[in-house]
Amino acid sequence: MRLRDPPRCSSDHDDRYFIEELTFADAESILAMLRELCPQVVDGLLPVWVRNLAYRLDLLQCPDEPALLREAAQSLWLHGPDWDDIAANPTRRAEGLEASRAGSPT
Image 1 (tube, rainbow, N blue to C red):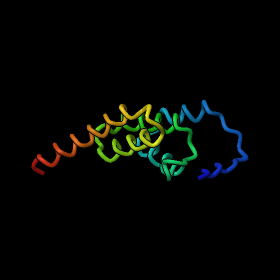
Image 2: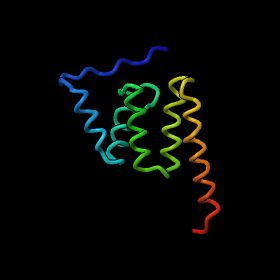
Image 3: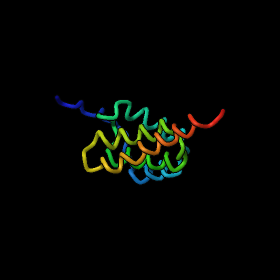
Image 4: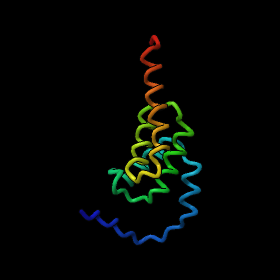
């Protein structure tokens, strides 16, 4: 199976500008960017390292969001066994948050 090639863009891009924008973006903007550029985690338009950085920055802003923790872990799992141990941590944290919320009165 061959992954599709990313579409070509006629604009000249400055990676440093992109990383600066990403660094100071709010959580909603980061998620919107991830959803737009990587609607299918497996073949998104962002390099894996950028996607991982984006999830990390988002989790720093929203550390107690189980769905986001699971999404970030899924991205790590899909791109090789090197990150499996790291991916297990947000998954366990999501499970713990959900368990504590289930046991708390609303």
